[in-house]
Image 1 (spheres, rainbow, N blue to C red):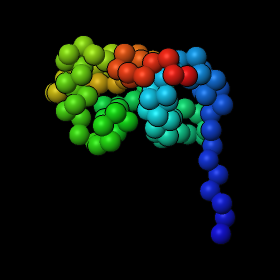
Image 2 (image 1 turned 90 degrees about the vertical axis):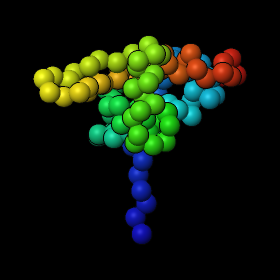
Image 3 (image 1 turned 30 degrees about the vertical axis):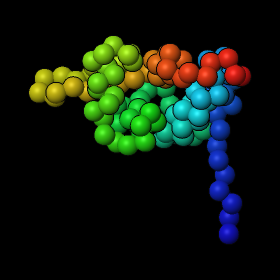
Image 4 (image 1 turned 135 degrees about the horizontal axis):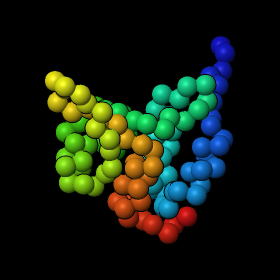
Length: 108
C-alpha cells in the first residue's frame, strides 16, 4: 500500500515561527495550514466557513460572524448586490485574533 505524502510549505512554517506566540496558538495554526493546501502552498485567504472549521470545529459560521460584528477579527466583505454578506479573512487577521485570545502566551 502506498504511503501518503504530506506536503508542507516550509516558507510558511518559517513565517509562522515569527508569528506564533503560544503553544495553544500553534494548535490552531497547524489546523489552519491544513485547509486546502494546493501544491504545497499555504492558503493566505480564508472563507468564513474555513475559519469556523479552524476555530470551532464546525461549518456553522454564526460564531465567526459574531466575532466580526464585535470587531474581534479582521475581515473583508466581498459580497455584492443581493448577497447578504461574503467575508474573507487574511491569514494575518486570523493570527492577530489568535494572538489576542490564546491565553498561554510566553510558553514557547
